[in-house]
Image 1 (cartoon, rainbow, N blue to C red):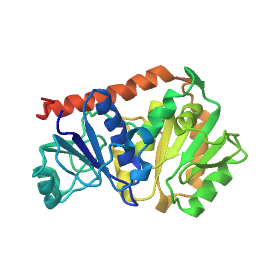
Image 2: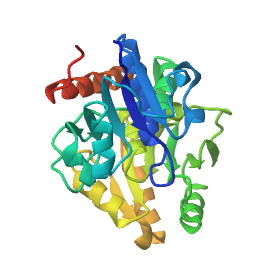
Image 3: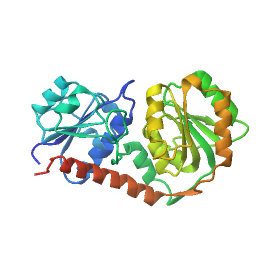
Length: 296
């Protein structure tokens, strides 16, 4: 292919790291199909070495453009379309209507969500590959509330878990506390696979936890994520849904009761999980092709 498929993505306070991570997975997958790629991102230092050579500071001559940076303006998409056809991912902005293809990987509150592929993050998928074939669940609960959870909420959760459950609290980007020893540099996939329950806000971590056979309780920073979780709680069998504003001791009593009474899977089959990860990437490509994209 003379012109590459260009992926436009990035990180930041409003974006987090999930958009970049899943597009790195897609870039790696497309590259594995034998096609040329470019990754246009505001965080080249977060691109793994095996993909860093494909980083480009600007969107240049391309065969097709995939944009995953949340809500776009009409001007943004119009400029990209001057270069090549454009697909937008989880985009609820005005630019969505100008895109050649719009694909929703995550549920949203604006468009009907029926069934969609899911793309797991690059680091998560790679760490899954390094695990043994079967991973036993020896942690009651892992808690991840993002880089900056409310301090009082974090203290309440940790204090409630300390003497009653085996727990790991994930702080920011890769720092852990808890009463279960974990090896330095442990991958997120291993934590998810070893845990029976995961407390997190609505987002990519929730889907990673579900893949790993965890039961999920969402603790959301605001109404938007709370409403998203509520819209899919039956579909994904969420065991609880909370919001920071009303989160207190009574919430923790409910959560501990659910964790202590619930039964679930005792181990995770690594190869089955990896098969689901690959299946999501295949389905994404199929959705692109149904939307009119061709490789010729």
